[in-house]
Amino acid sequence: MDLRRLTDEVEAVSGAYARRNGITRDDTWFLLKLQEEVGELTQAFLMRSGQARDKGHSADELELGFRSELADVLAQLLVMARHHGVDLEAEVERKWMPWHPDRLPADSGGTTGADPNEAAGPASGHAP
Image (cartoon, rainbow, N blue to C red; front, side, top):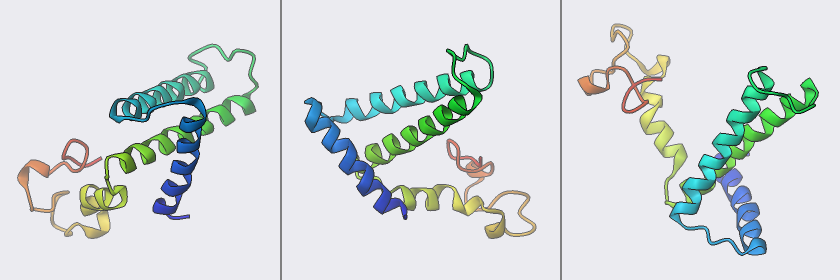
């Protein structure tokens, strides 16, 4: 499944959930819901890594919880991007792919030479 189709499918689920529960999905809701999911991912990670109590869950349940929360974060990010009209595929291509090792000149030393302020890459304008 490609990212656009996945976004369409996730949007259908999110929209139906919101209608069923009388939720207004405005700019604030999208951001706070993403934050909520990142918090749940953090909790699942801490439980899985033994840095928080496991609440009686087995190792398999902790792994499943971690994987589920990763999916929730991705899904929430997709619907938030869609809400704001952001083409994530295009943005990843623009921001991250110039730093792909196969796209960098062999003698670049890790820079594309396009902008000296971006010598380190995508994250905050710098490479990962």
